[in-house]
Image (cartoon, rainbow, N blue to C red; front, side, top):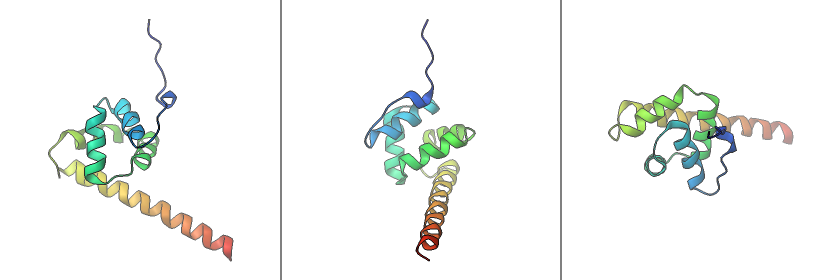
Length: 101
């Protein structure tokens, strides 16, 4: 009997790593995930962290990936990812400004 492994146990490196991890989580092909990340200019590491935090987004991501380019799930997903990245960037800027002061 094959023992199930936790998704965190997969090791990855380089640019293909996040796509491998995301494909394992969503049950999609790694090449399709990587092509989606490249075409939408999404940071794979940030997306991976977001998907780990919110498992409900896995289904939404799979629908965005399998639909036509520019479908409502794709647009929603890329906007969410970008806004999340901007929030993190603003938090770091505020924290750094407080350290300097």
